[in-house]
Length: 280
Image: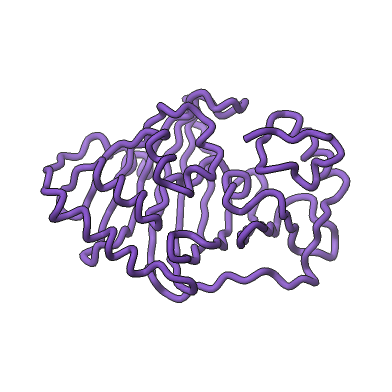
């Protein structure tokens, strides 16, 4: 863990040399745009470290893939490990998300389907220690390059939540956008010789989140990307393995969470009995 933190916290300590924007910043964005098409995507692995001042680490690990459309991320297939819920796999396509391995799925079924928690509201699916910077978005990549300084193949910079929310659909669809918009993300991008992002390291503090247990924590996330533009096709699970209803115990837990302030895109199907529709 110390090695991960040391690598991530070098964001503010690295010596950087400014280079002309015209020479360095346009090429990676152009390269990315050329790869964005349905049926293509990118694979990644991710490690998160979460510190609360006592040395406690609650971070998760993730691996998976994004499928593109012509603008950025169209769908996702991600396996999450080392979280409180244990190992789980998440598929998100369009306006529907599927979870496997989570608690509350009835016996005989493998996947829980939700049409109310859109996959793009991914913080609920992947965890609050997820990577909030998505380099598969051209406008996001352009902003990161503009805000940062480069040294050889590395870009180091900071960007406030409010600025990232303006350019990034991924960030704007996360619950982080409801946190203090003055929070700053420190980041380091590593670029390949072809102009593709091979790694994103980010860190930020949880300030005024509105959620118990999160404020005061610091998030360090290290994400490695590979096979940019390779074939990626994400499909829905076999309908015979899918359920739209959780167990009674799980529904009660979700109702309590809903009343406790969880924010959904609309009324979660499992939370309808409570009659609440928390606003995002």
